Image (cartoon, rainbow, N blue to C red):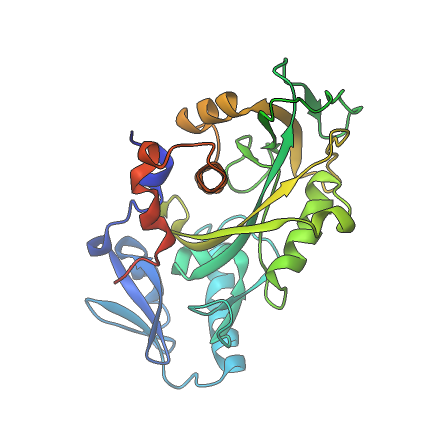
Length: 302
C-alpha cells in the first residue's frame, strides 16, 4: 500500500532549487524563488544558475558563521525566516563531520542544510481495552496491567499548539532536534525527560533503530534531515508527564489505532516514519505493506 508519509519524505523537486555550497562542498538546497533575497549580499554569495556559493573570502569557521549570521538576522527581520529558536546548529553533511559554519536553527530550512533529530517510540504491552489519554499537565491516567497476549500499545504525544512547526499534530512519545555539541543519545535522554518526564535511568535502556533520511519541500524551505530512531520498552505503570510545555497531551493507543493515525496523516511525517520503522523492525507490520520504506534508509543522492 502507499503511505503518505513515505511519499512526503522524498517529495522534492531538484529543478526548483539551487545547491548551497561552502568551501567547495554542496551543503544545502535553496528554493529558486528565495535566491533573489540573497542578491542583496553580493559580497557574501556568488550566485549562478545552478548554485549559491558562500564567498571564498570567508575561509574560517568563525568568518563563515559571522557572515551567515548577519544575513540570517536580516532575513528574519523581514519575516523570511520564522520560528527563531536561539539554538545553534552546525552545517555539516555527516553528523561526525567538523562544522563548516554555525547557524540559527530556524535558518536551516531556508538554506536546506542537513539537520539531525532523535525520535523515541514508547512501547508498552497492555490489554485490549479503551486507550486512556492524559493531558500534559493533568493528573496521571490509569495504565492497565500487562496482557498475556503481548499486544503492543504505544504512548504518543500531541504537540503544543504554540510549536513553531507542526503545531497540534500527533508525534512520537519523544522527538527533538540535535543541537551542536550534543551527542545523539544524550539528546535522547534530555528530550525524554523534558517532553515525557522519563528519568535518565529508564531512558538509557532505549534500543537503537535505524537512521531515516528525509528530503522534502516544506513551507519554510527544505527539510534535509537524518532521524535517529530509538524504541523504549516502558513498564506497565508508566504514565508520561510533560515538563517543558511543548506537549499538549499524551495518549496510549493500540497498534491498530496507531496505524490509523499514520494513514490519516494526523501524525507528523517524521514521527510517522519513526513509527513505521519500529513496527517493521519488530515484526508488527508486514514489510510487504510498506515496500517503499527502505529507500528512506539511504541518503538521497544529487
